Image 1 (tube, rainbow, N blue to C red):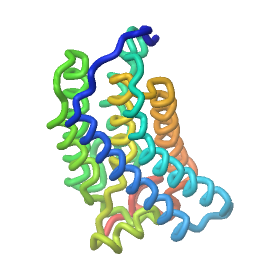
Image 2 (image 1 turned 180 degrees about the vertical axis):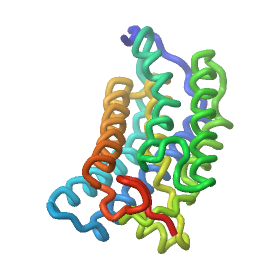
Image 3 (image 1 turned 30 degrees about the horizontal axis):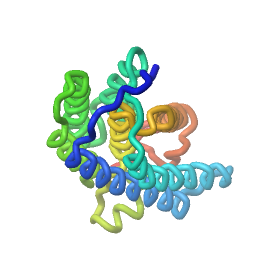
Image 4 (image 1 turned 45 degrees about the vertical axis):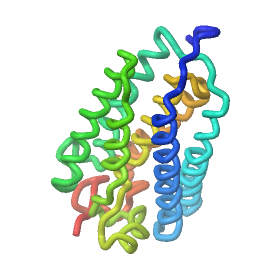
Length: 232
């Protein structure tokens, strides 16, 4: 629940960090959606467009979300607060399953980054629970969450591989966005709508996991593992 008239004074540095993170994560998600539309072929091509446009829409919404800082609201308490805190590290745990490889991941870089972000997510949740500063941790999470490292040859990475010479930042961009939404919600920024967006990102990741493992969609063409990654 949200307690009426319970507001906190926003840290300006934290606001700037989150805003930059939202812009970068939003751009990354949108570019990934465009890459998917341009390079993916499937029996039902309308599904490709649906997934790709969904990525683009989420990316644009993520960029726009920083406008919420203009009208801070009431901070959540009780069960909603605890759900939001747990959602931060859990998002990175969930993303680790997207390739169908468990925590082992495609390569060492992907594995190390994912584990590091899970740990940082736990630290952020603890710091938020204690009402401590998270600015420096957020900077590190944004850097690690968007650093190009994925070598998977899935169509969703094709544009990125052309830009960065065979690596892409796609693995952690959605849980990073979910983390930024959770922090904003916990600070009283568009709390209910931010919570809905987190749920949407969770649904997208679950769809990718289940679809990839059972149907080879949306990562059709990945042959090293059922629903997993094709590596260089």
